[in-house]
Length: 181
Picture 1 (tube, rainbow, N blue to C red):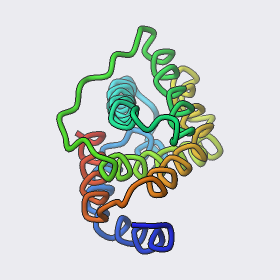
Picture 2 (cartoon, rainbow, N blue to C red):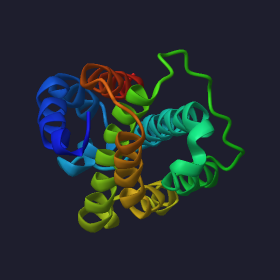
Picture 3 (cartoon, one colour):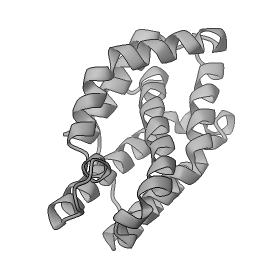
Picture 4 (spheres, rainbow, N blue to C red):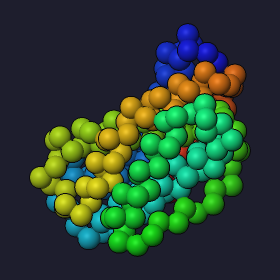
């Protein structure tokens, strides 16, 4: 896969992961607030679990791609997100190990999902800032701040590797399922 096929991949990602995306959204406390529900303690618990899972995915990508760190300058910037997770948890964040296909295509798929999450964080902060408790904003701010880094990460992987689109899509499905579980 090279950059000229990126639009085709994006379309396939949108089409072939829509069921996974919808299920993750249904369970998302942020989407419940977006639809008018008031924030509550259960949402806080679900929200913190979701960010820990996203942190796990970021750490998985870093561990998987660390050997190419010099060719992936955006990778280091993404590590600000686990620091924001620590701030919200009030304790050190320790990523859980993930047993899944460890390759560049999987990381690209995960990266595309997290790119969507980071772009969504920008919208959430803009539209729902007054409805989200302040203690839950560091993660959203960190994700919004690195949205261009997630995009760059996906493009850098594409430039360095011949990616199998099917594996990228499977990586994205895995990421949606992992975050939404």
